[in-house]
Image (cartoon, rainbow over all chains, first blue to last red):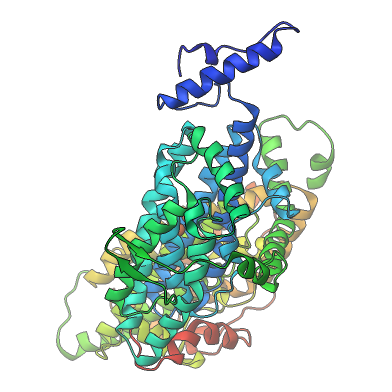
Length: 351
Length: 262
Ligand SMILES: [Fe+2]
Ligand SMILES: [Fe+2]
């Protein structure tokens, strides 16, 4: 958008404010329509900024909360090779969290603020991670299915309209694609192993399929998805706004279909059954049909107040609180190093 | 460390070197296991990332060293056989890496002691008569040098940070320091290998280690602990009570699926 009028600082006279605002918005939307990216110093509508902050923060939170179900298996990985792979993956997820918090910070919020909102339960993360990871095979199912869903969800975000977010997502997506392959490879090893190993793999897929299909793509946002009309209409309105602003590129339901189309042949190759009797190839549509998600029932079973959901947040808050003295020490040391610390608490601290 | 030994003498050295490699592999594996326990609980996301990165390197070292042990001792045991199918009494790590470290300052204190030791040892092992061990040591020394930098930086930050961080850092050092002497223990195995030129003598390493850690602690305004007792026994498989649960956790999934492939 360099050189565009929208980039100029908005400093309207008192009476002209509304008109100027409308003109800037129109110009902003026209530029987006041309496929230009928005950079941190560009003018942007408040709604666009708010929608981005909410989405990027939720994404960043999902990365770090998502480390928990898999991280809990690091000490129990059944081979040193798998331990290495899982360590590398969890490390990547921490990195994704960092890139995304940095992208959010370009919009005028800071990481501490966003984390505080997460800890107070005011900002959300992908509810998929409120499912418990009960066995070793769950780490494979999560990587194959949940990261797989993330790749499909996030690939279009590499071209999202906000520059810093798009650039962060390009790095994230590359690594996510790698996680999916490793997850598939882990499941393959289990499927080719003993009957008990294969049974563990099938059980994990039985439990992680629905969370991936339903929760990683959000609520239905087209009537065709067969959800209730009110939910679909509401979802559609939000998606339309996000698509108009170039934050989203596809509806939730389009992406969900793409995911199912990806997974069905992979599951067949593994010899695993996806727990949806409605899955069958539809020659006419050129896609796999799949059973509608019973959102009402599903939401009831997965409130924010399940045991695992409480556990995820409590774990995160405990880590934050237990580490407070470390962060305070690092800040005090940094302040002293930069010479900004002339007197006060941290000077007496070392006495 | 240049003489080429053949015949039965060579076999004796190989068996001894196998045990030595497994000791170092066990150190790396058990320390990695401890660091895995931090991930998602670290004070910052940057630390989650740093500690998982260090743990990843250590698992890599364990894999190479344990596999080397299985080749040199003629049993053909794999890295996973060593990690998942031995009993507590068969692990030969130093006690330093297995004791509970209390808090982040304890972890940093342990990392300080271990990393300075490991860099010095691996740099010296690069001259080993065993080509595989030497090649490994060259690579590992470079990696552990980064871990040492991470530890040094935290020791200084916590030592000079706040009253609380300095207090915790002193307590962490007091907690782990009685276990540092064992890293340089010179038992019959080490003496034999030193004489054969296969591994460095621990005495000079210990002196350099002492100078280095004392210098870091001085920069951090922290006293060098002077423990009145020294823990020992790890190299003979005599561990602490905390070690049983650690091994049980490490091996649980592997042992639940006999004959499994991963
Ligand atoms: Fe990620
Ligand atoms: Fe991932």
